[in-house]
Amino acid sequence: MDEHVPERVRAALARLQSPPTSAPLRLLHEPPPREVSDDESGVLAGWWPVPRLTEAPFWERLAAAYSAGLETPHLPVGGACGLQHYAGRLVLAVLGQHYAGRLVLAVLGAWVQTGHLPPLAHERWWMRLDENGHTLDVGLLAPVEVWTSTAPGEPMDVEGSANALLTGHFGPIVEAARSATRITARLAYGCVAASRAGAFASLHRRAVPEDRVRVRDVAERFLRAGAWPDPDRTVTFTEIGLPQTSALVHERRTCCLIRLGTGHAACSSCPDIPREERWPRLVAAAASRDQASDLRVVVGRG
Image 1 (tube, rainbow, N blue to C red):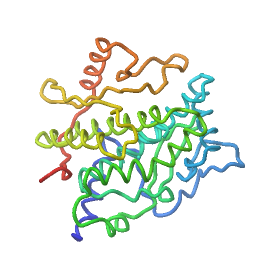
Image 2 (image 1 turned 45 degrees about the vertical axis):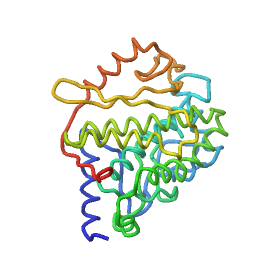
Image 3 (image 1 turned 120 degrees about the horizontal axis):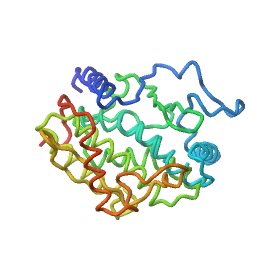
């Protein structure tokens, strides 16, 4: 393996952690020393080991807190939104919508820049929750040298990365969330897909202009990978032109249910609102987000 890979990975992660992506990822050399929660305290806020997300009883607790924060009695709302939130935290740096949203940006962001996925074993990851079950940060307990020392010499392809992230990491989490909250598989994986789509849109906004088409193509292939259990695609992508730039927007095929919370409306990408209303909202949201041009993409190069 190239001896400079660890340095490239560190640079890629530092870029993700800075604006405009601002991935909430922490690299940990040991478990978080303070603010670690446990069942006996009865407090949800604090750091938790991610293996807890593979346990249905923990999901019952997390989803109940999330639903209560939205002032809704419906447990599936907390299950779907909590899953997507975690995934987004992980992806940008890996089912609650909230967990998925935190995880995926970090993982996909490192991968598209270097070709190397971080370790995805649950025991390597920690999550910091607030009292409502929102994932605030994700922490990876693995020095960069450890994860790159076992990485393949060539960048991991799209199918392999999708399988590792979706089946290996999220599969057991989705099953636990579904068991606890009775959400359907289509809804659960729709939340995970939306988090991945949002992560790719963030990476597209930061990519150098000549690499933005590559981000779009990789995103399309990732969302069509064989690892997805539902052959019906759960999101659709469109690259749109904006004044002086472009943006990647997605439309969902499933509703995340947040509109059932008190005072909450449907998201811009929600399939339950008419497209003539949805599309202008998507374009306006994309135009309002900050852009940059400092992220190079290695995945998808010939």
